[in-house]
Amino acid sequence: MTNTTDSTTELAEALTRLDRARALRDALAPLARLITEADEEARAAAIAAAAAGMSERATAAKLGVAQPTVHTWLDGRNAAPMPAPTIGGRVWLLHSAARTLETIVHRLEGEQLPRKHSGTQSPLSRIVNARRSLGEAAFYLAEAGSSLEHLGS
Image (cartoon, rainbow, N blue to C red):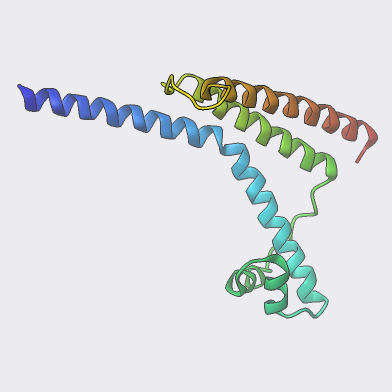
């Protein structure tokens, strides 16, 4: 009976871990979009640099990536790069990233954290403060994004 109990416990723990992993991946989806936008902008910049006569090695050094990465971007030139994102679009992406981080930090509040702490604040109170700060950052980024949309930027 112990083997059955152990395997049931292991299965329950594995399912809980899978649920947490999926929730984390779902929460990070806006960050994945932000990274995709950054990659597309880097690709567009590399294509523009190649058209201006810059070598792949120099372009890679300027972007801080490996030369094979730039070579791959330039080999895939058959599709035109997307236009550069507007400032407003970048602000909205940052807003999404801040909201995502706020959600992830909020989930930490539900974790079992150690009661002991060194210093003046417990880990939980620091996590709560971080969540509030991220919420405030997201709020201001949303206001900035709205203003930029209104101004047509």
